[in-house]
Image (cartoon, rainbow, N blue to C red; front, top):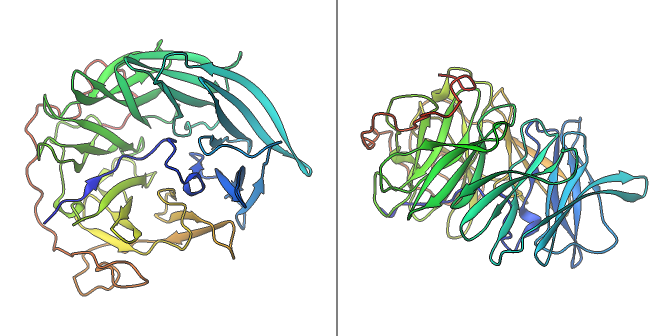
Length: 392
């Protein structure tokens, strides 16, 4: 069986289809994306916490470039980042009657050739926003909204970084995947201690290990690593602070598919194995939703709503997965999915992927996980000040 590819969640790099990207605040109240009007792109804010979702267009004086990035803030304003040669300008957009108000925040200069700047995932508090500037030899974390005097560099990390996962509810601990010395390992940047850097994820000495998602409530971590199969990425899970080995479930290997985890159910304190994890599964001809819990060791396959803003969504604490979508008939919609719990056999049409246009997915009965690499602490905290911020 050909194993699936592991696709780390994107944090804003242009994939040529900006209208399919959607950023959601950590509390699920607002979302933002670039929407299309004819041949022109414009920012759009979605309000998600009311009786019905609705969109507010925030067009500027001219159409936006496809490389523009947007991110919602907790107060309903939208942060916009516009690249201008080797500068990146930042502003906050907000509706003003029939028009759009804009509050300039300043700019970040990237004079070194080859430097890329992307917005990091929305901060837990929704008040601040951060960007990652990746140069040839080092990466810088910038506070671009919520500061006192405009954009401010908070940390510089040797090596080329990617990803970006928040490890706590306070927006202090940021995990980045750092490429240095031929290997990629996850490190933690403490934004309140001058950008202090600590190792976080080291499964094997020569493996490429990346942190894809983390849930501060349960401590559940979703990990990508080639440690169990050198040269081939596998999707695994662990628990923050645990001394148990990282596990790489066989059920997360799907034939000829790319699997991207994009949301973890919050609120499951001390119960990481019961957290529902949402997966974006992309096959040769379609994309659908997978839901998986570590305790069940099998994936439930569900059809994605038409017009899904692919790879975006949010769990409620009650286990409802909310997926934003946009179609010609419904320009701003949210579909809600609830995954069945417990064992479901191969005759189940949803799990087998034959319902509602979901491509057929090979089903396998739950089976024991292959043993992971033996390490004393597969998710080592070492000297990082994380012990008091996460569930043991």
